[in-house]
Length: 260
Ligand SMILES: *[C@@H]1O[C@H](CO)[C@@H](O)[C@H](O)[C@H]1NC(C)=O
Image 1 (spheres, rainbow, N blue to C red):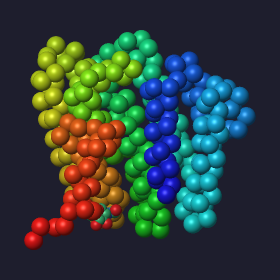
Image 2 (image 1 turned 90 degrees about the horizontal axis):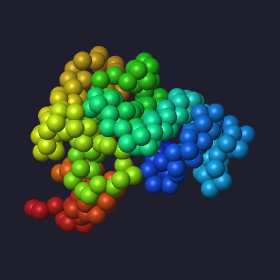
Image 3 (image 1 turned 135 degrees about the vertical axis):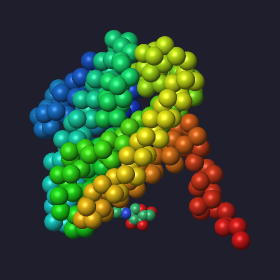
Image 4 (image 1 turned 90 degrees about the vertical axis):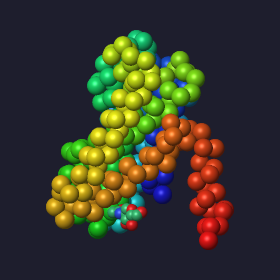
């Protein structure tokens, strides 16, 4: 349940930045998120105050629930959420300046802003007693397999975004940055990015062998999350935004009988 709420808070924050707030308004919201205290609500523009208060209340509830179950405090997740907010602000600034970043920089920021690092930390915390020793420190250091999860998410998302008409409220995505930096067509950028995604899957598979047995359940947990990416962004489609793309999957899981 916490995972679902956290996910939803992400989406609200993301949509606020993408479609709701001006750069100045988002900057104020971010400043309050960095302060993270009730009195900081005075910084926040009127129509966003409710969101800010709710955010604080939700995190308080998550914290109580996690502590009640003897697990961990929510502090790590809070830090991740604050970082996510800074990334959104940076993207909003790039959009405002009409800045087309170098591909590497765009990918780095985009991987950090896709929410994957935060959710990887979160799925680890939620393992509770089953979390292997050292797994929290391991995931907090963003090992390769976590970054692969984030990059796969970002690159697949941007490939899907490039397949639909451009919205001028979107900052230049990885495909556009690659094409512009290397002076190539989008088709060439697609192929280059497909091959980068393949490399990240190799990193993901290697992670199963790279770490000791003790950490394996933690590694597997991250990989399980990575595996959900193609469900949403496979075939260059953004089923995360346009859920009708999930129709076939849902039917095959819940409606159609398994062929005999
Ligand atoms: C990962 O997913 C597999 C198959 O869906 C499941 O059996 C396994 O328990 C999951 N592992 C962890 C650590 O969540």
